[in-house]
Amino acid sequence: MRAVPHVGSTFGSVAAPVMALVLTIASVWAPPPLQAATPKKTEAELRSLREKIERVTRQVSRDAVERDRLSAALRTAELSLGQARGELTRVSREYADRSSRRAALTQESQRQQHALAQERVALAGQLRAAYLIGSEEPLKLLLNQQDPLHSGRLFEYYRYFGRERADQIALIQAHLQRLDELDAELARQQSELAELKSAQQSQLQQLERARDDRQRVLASLTAQARTREQSLARLRSQQADLERLLRELDRSLKSVAPPDYTTAFGRLRGQLSWPVAGRVTAEFGERRASDVKWEGVVIATERDAPVKAVSAGRVVYADWLPGLGLLVIVDHGESYLSLYGHNDQLFKAAGESVTAGEVIAAAGDTGGRAEPELYFEIRRAGKPVNPAPWFRQRSPTP
Image 1 (cartoon, rainbow, N blue to C red):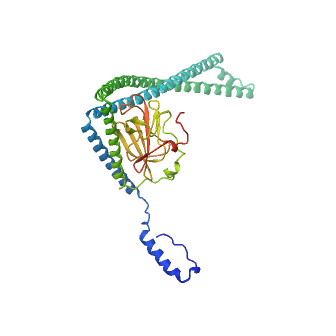
Image 2: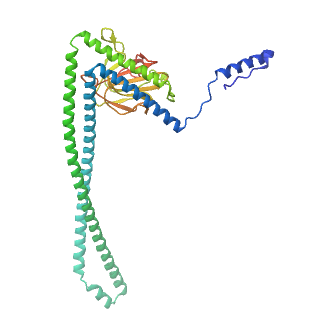
Image 3: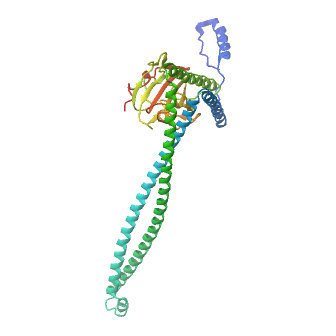
């Protein structure tokens, strides 16, 4: 129940009826008491959200496939291409790590061999000294004790000499054992490097095949859209797919508790950082074709450039959509969504939380784009808003 301010005695006899009225209104309009979310409840809500989003994704994708065979072919080709690129990047990174590890092992082996050589030289010197002294010298000192103090010092010297020889031999043995271990590790690393090199070549071939498949589909799409009317119809169809997806997501999100963030998205106007470094090639409201306008901004960038969430939120869509390719949609609460399209790889799945500046994707050219770029939108209550005033800087140029 909401707290009711104290009513002073100045109000006289009116105070009691007013107090009663306020209490009545408060009891009717007061929100239910907040309950702390338990881990089981949070997990159940998240699972429910993911299931709903998956149903929306399947439905929208199935409708697009049934309506447009070439869009389905493009989706398959681009997903295969993205997977091949991602696997090639992973294998190449692992190969580089293994090569660095092998180089470090080689350096350690060289250090051990150098130390072994020094220990052997030291031991050889001690053995020569022991030979020159002779094995009978301690016995002579024991029998001829004309100067006990002198003899004691010499005996201590011989004992020290013996300990040093034993230590040198132990060090040599330790170096030899470590060299054996390094040789075995180097052999294993060399074998794994050969396997990774083979896997890298295989991924390169798969990448080439996927790239060829995508080019064939794009050529078919170009041939199909011979006229301006056909191109316009495709743009309208793709825009309709996005609008329907957003309506379905909005319907699903209403049944799930909204995300809770420390800073409301609406207060971040003029404070956001750009989602990717690059150059704006299309601005909000610019005409694409006939009556179709850009509802966001297009940023030309480098392939695999990190795409970052502009603010904290929860991913509500991460999949391929006609016209936008691999698309991420983040719910920021207060009916605000941000959209990131044409990615090469997605690093977040539906239902996952993200923080401001967290990398959520790698930029690419999916959706049939000729060059790597990012399409970015901000929506409030389903309506696109101009994102330019939301950024701290006027340009995403690094």
